[in-house]
Image 1 (tube, rainbow over the protein chains, first blue to last red):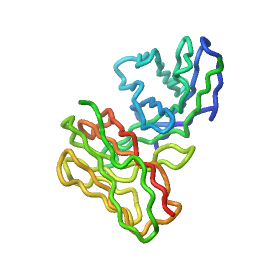
Image 2: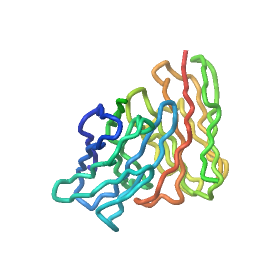
Image 3: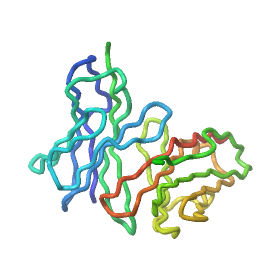
Amino acid sequence: AQSVTQLGSHVSVSEGALVLLRCNYSSSVPPYLFWYVQYPNQGLQLLLKYTSAATLVKGINGFEAEFKKSETSFHLTKPSAHMSDAAEYFCAVSIIQGAQKLVFGQGTRLTINP
Amino acid sequence: DTEVTQTPKHLVMGMTNKKSLKCEQHMGHRAMYWYKQKAKKPPELMFVYSYEKLSINESVPSRFSPECPNSSLLNLHLHALQPEDSALYLCASSQRTGVNAEAFFGQGTRLTVV
């Protein structure tokens, strides 16, 4: 079964520092992967998605992710963290079981220190 | 209009009450979803409607009853809920149910069962 694992339930970085949120996938077929962000008391917002067209995917708010098949990874990065980036981040894999189903990782809470 | 609107934002109900959650989108999307999110957990799929027909029911208890009256509306009828059903209920929509479809999420309804 396809799944994703997010390493680190909580990541803390200083403002201006590099953000790296880790996601590894398990899939026997090319996966379709997504990163979503959830701000407190909000719904989920799509940051970016991988659909095999390019291994480096650029998303909103300065985030990007690189698909590495050899490492079965799809890590999310941002060169310089802003206070407004503090949120919960979810990696998800899309599967078809009659219709599309998103299977989410456990999430990573990102804290930004001033 | 790229919004998925959910009402109400907050709901407190007793275990003998009947209530409904409402979700609306005007993006012409033909797939709509209900997800349940417990505190500090990722969203979990409950139901998927594709072209107004129920495509996925993730073995959800019958006290949750979905309804899709038309392509823009999705309801979730609640009856005889338990305190453990307290959660954030998220509605989402996508243009289609393909494996690379982008899901747009609403802000959620925070439900408390007393």
